Image (cartoon, rainbow, N blue to C red; front, side, top):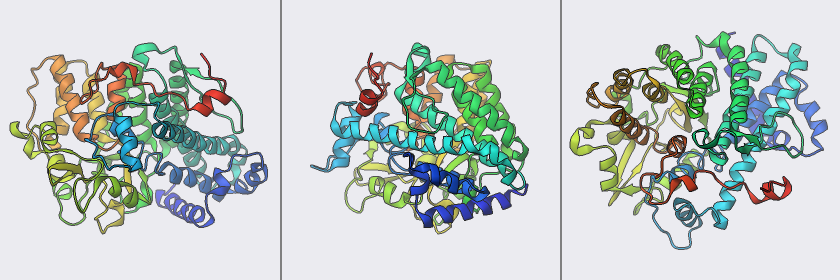
Length: 471
């Protein structure tokens, strides 16, 4: 089908959901039986439901704040939290930064992540259990697009919950972790072993890949049309690469990453002139996104944490720490990420990735979920030889304005350079904590705590009590 037609349908669905409110697709109580029939009586109802999930993913408790530049990057030690007396956010972050998961404020944040993510999954399940019998209601290839996105999103969300609440596979892939929910309704679902959750994720992604394959040559994420930010074939391949690497299957991770890299013409590296522009700066490198969320309250969410008219903002760091991160005394001062994605404010630095100063709407309100550069990092880690790995890493470095690494380096040196890249590239995006957890690093840089004791977040108290999750 013409992808523009699908985007027009999504625009209409977005308008419908925003004007009608979210109650009809967020309500998962027994009274939803009638609402289900009303919502899914035609193609537009399915589009409304899918759009509603995308909107919910951009909430402050999920990827609009806490699951990206908020709680997740606080736990990755990205910031030096400025203390603001009785301010709830600063106190919450300070406790999260020392991994005090028993603190009531931290527990509330963790519980909100769990409950809101599973609410999104419930709505995806509601859509998926009904879509096959309504296939004839869809026009063109919208059935494949809607079902494929729903399956891929279900895998994405379960995988992030696994990375938070489950043991890393490198530690124990057989330990019970989280439920993988594929039915709609209120109930208690078993905690599945880590490896079983991963298998479910990959099963959903395999089906999504087949459904979305027909549009992979036209699914170009970067567009002046902000509705182009949906889960597509290339996001599925990127997520497959991410999951396979987490599971320790480097050959499959490499194959998935290479498929994306081999079709890079669809999402080229950002041009330096765009990344450094005074007006309409491409702060997030929109051309490189495989999957991006639209977060319509991002200005309120992000600038409250990263922007300040007086003094350092809440989520900031020291000048010395920022300059050390980018190695400005040894060639890193040419890095476009340092020069154009960070701002010096008084005695420290803050990221300006999410500052909403652009006039072009397609550069605003976006949060990256899967990046092209991550595919190069995965390929670098999984390559057959160190020389090949350095080659992948050098491609990103070149496009960020850095000198090339010597290809004749040790495997340990390559690993260290990959970590440096994750720290620079994914700052403010919630991926660094997962990197340390995946390799079970004994320390998270910036903390002296035994990290192996803090990688698994405790299940929310309600889940333990009502789900009877007792050891």
